[in-house]
Image (tube, rainbow, N blue to C red; front, top):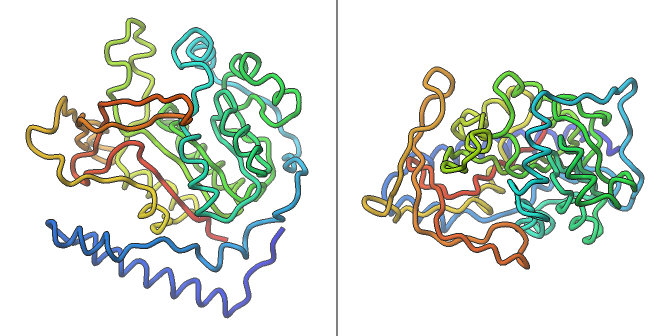
Length: 325
């Protein structure tokens, strides 16, 4: 495990963070096209020089250390996701995070990775092909047995739940999760976020869906309402901050797509999501904006795309954090 930073590095880290907060505050207060253009021109991605103080060995392929006394548990809704994964709710070998895997590799320093809610393990497989020591945990045992039995046998993926991770503290350089947290239940949120932060050494990178438009016309009502945890971006930021992870603003600048020209009659099927007494309501609209979903070779091109109207952010909605150590 990497050593703790010396006093000089710690002072530099704190000063850099405070300068970043002031910079973000100035530009988040900008309004209109001029402010948006200025922010776009100035915002450039730079890896923090302090990240390498916290990540582990970049050569090991040892499995992650296990938490003593861990006991496997599942949830009451595992059966629904077993059915969703194996009976056509999700396409075979679909992978929400694979489209952005190489972006993570190029933009963040890491070697060990946990894919939290790995589904069919496609992201783990891809990361291992790129030389990363990647592992995944998934609620649905059925999808692991059906779509990635080789990785299940090898121990690269395993069944489990996000409220009860089997790994020791600081086991992974990065914890990744792609469109998973919108599926958990409100009473699970604090424990899930606490666990994700606990097992990360430094980075957390997630996409969290903020829309309720999923499967709105599905015949099966269970599928029509799988997004059980819809909250605005600021609410998620506060939850991760509560459990010791701060927003990596540079990574958001590098990854999150926006389109301020989507206004007026370009917005369709607008809905208010969220909960008034828990983070407030926010508007999500559908726009005509082609985007590629999943692995490139799947050629899954979709025309309709959702947008959070207040900040003009297009799905997928990315969330990036650094763990305080």
